[in-house]
Length: 100
Image (cartoon, rainbow, N blue to C red; front, top):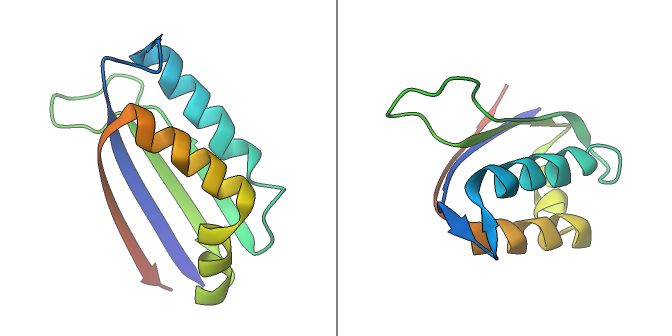
């Protein structure tokens, strides 16, 4: 299995929406991928409740059956659509993938 963890910071305003609105929108769009993309074992997008100054705005914790499942997720049309929107509202992103 592969764990895929991504963290983003968001612009205060982007795509005509305030940061909080974009955060909720992205969280919901990511959660919607849970049952659409084969190979996802777990998928949990999280907005920190009371973030510290050094916290990221949104975190995605996900687990995939295999490296191939993660690669298929990355190119799945539904994920590509969500990722395109995220790039339009996020200011930075970090990611780590590791095998378990």
